[in-house]
Length: 150
Image (cartoon, rainbow, N blue to C red):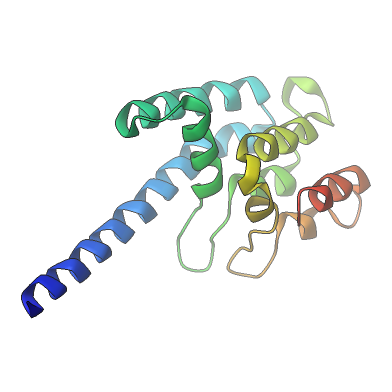
């Protein structure tokens, strides 16, 4: 009986490692388009990742996209950034111009659905949240983040 318990613990540890690896995979999949402020690229990458996850898990692509946005995190020690940290920190506008990053921020929060508060309030290893990155000179972004639970 104790062997089964140990095995269950091993299974839980293996699941946690897989979940962490998947979160990092999602982060790096979304990071470049977030840093560049490229909404069409973000939508395309998110659609590809969501289609693959939906097929794997037997859920809808919308449910898969929500999970991806909520779980995506650079989980290295001293980091723990999310794609929303990247968007708010880099403020890249892409083809949409200087305010293009606001569209990315809104898209991430909308896709996150009921997980938006978790995404908006996620703290990096330093304790910085997306709200910190916007608080000095981006009142529209602050209002949006607060509306989503930051």
